[in-house]
Image (tube, rainbow, N blue to C red; front, side, top):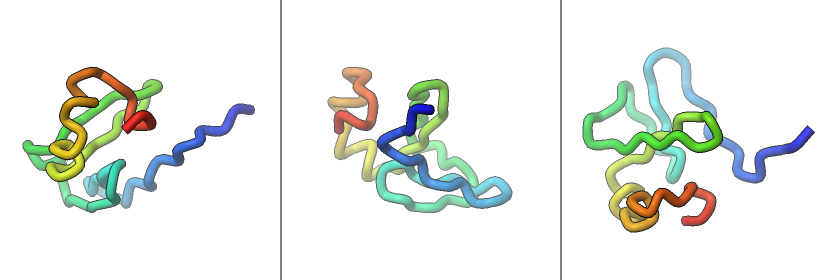
Amino acid sequence: MEQDPTPQPEQPGGDSIVCAGCGTVAEEVPVTWTCSVEDGARRYFCDDCARANLRAIEGRLDSTWW
């Protein structure tokens, strides 16, 4: 089996969401967070991570390239 070189953060129980960049936890998805689908999995990024990597996001680069 192939292993993913960048492990995804564990999503806490309930409706909590974890930022795939820095690990910030939110009780529900804030409207200002960015959602990205990479390899069929949804990844959420907080405001700070999204702002820091805006050009890469707009260029549709996977987060492993940031």
